Image 1 (cartoon, one colour):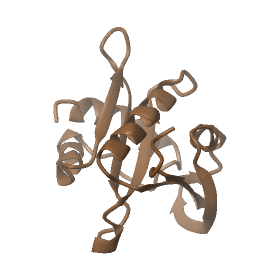
Image 2 (cartoon, rainbow, N blue to C red):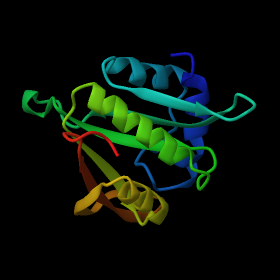
Image 3 (cartoon, rainbow, N blue to C red):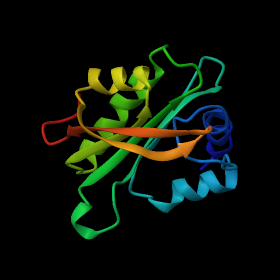
Image 4 (cartoon, rainbow, N blue to C red):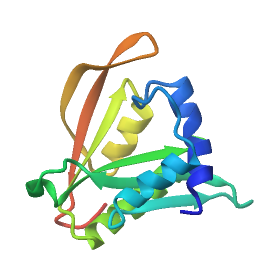
Length: 157
């Protein structure tokens, strides 16, 4: 994918400076392109600003690999500058793409605390279904992951 380098660049600070994901080493453009190519039926979306610079990206991947999970996805969104509406724009488009793709359920795992991400997902209709306590260790601390769910059967929000 042509946007793999820009996606890797935008994602790098999330890996290096936050506990919002559980990677220790930021993926390079080749690794990111491989991730995009790994699930060609699943959507990856990007948004650019007025200058053509990547403002954010969102994607859906299989929730699990076993056959019975084939109608369920996990969604994620990352933005260059949070709080400007790019995440909501991307997520709405991603949810619409998931509905069009035939998926029925989506889940989002959010490293806690992360009030902006929680608020975004809840505005879009996701509901909290539970928390995996202290499931990851990053930045010298144990991190909980909350899980939010949205049914796509009635169309995206």
